[in-house]
Amino acid sequence: MVHIVSFAFLALLAAGCGNPPPGNNTEKDAGADGSAPVGPGIMGILKDHADQPIGGGKVLACMATLCLFGDAEPDGRFFFPIEPTAEVALKTLPDPTATPRKSAALCPVRIVDSSLIDVGSLHVPSLPEGALIGPAAQDPQTLTAGDGIVLTLRVADLTPYLGDTLIDIAARRIPPSQACPWVVPEGEELVAVYALHPFAAVSSSPIAIRAPSDLPAGTKVQFRTISEIDGAFSEPVPGEADGTSVATAPQMGITELTWLVISRD
Image 1: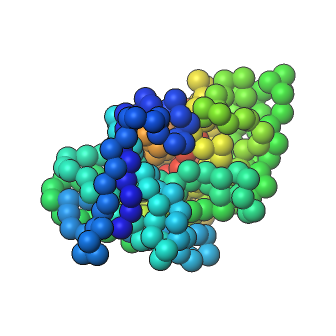
Image 2 (image 1 turned 90 degrees about the vertical axis):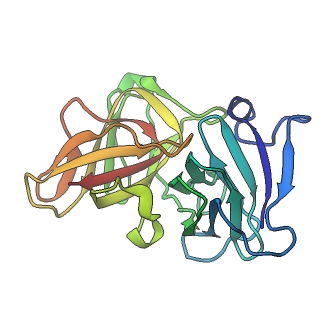
Image 3 (image 1 turned 180 degrees about the vertical axis):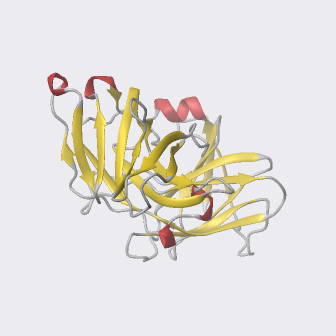
């Protein structure tokens, strides 16, 4: 269902998630004989924010040392054969030049046996205009990124992904129906999930978060991000609700802009 190219993750970084270096590829057809895919592996349908299939869209299944990537079929379907055990970041690449801008889709998947995991729909979020980043002299900067979320950060401590530039901070709240089931750690309840831009930028200092919420004041919550490398959750950052919002604890915050997951026990 999809052509797959695999290569070392360091090569992926060097190529900025673009085309693999020549002479270092292995390619094979998944379901090239027209048969239905079988496990172990991952399948799904790539869709846009309006729930429409994205035919030919690029999809990646990344692990700690390896990335698989290919094009979805005309109906948006994709399939990656992956041997267990594997921690996978199933994702797309952001497209800040599109109208509207596109963030990266992201779904953490754990393959533990020979079953075929159907993620359902992998949605590519759109992004709002965002808030322009000021010069480092204005640090710390408090920016309203979109959909009510506010980030306080130091731009001097922020490093963009290879090849990206720091222009603005943006966020899109993901409807629960468009988030894969595994975006929240097992045993926890999802409060909200956001796609953040610039995707995969990292900070050497904590980025404080405040997001709208109607949870009762005093409710304890956790803030995590999902690794775009292998789908792993970051360490939880404690936070609390005040009746109108949830916020990270003082002097604490996230350190990577990928997908932000807010949950509670």
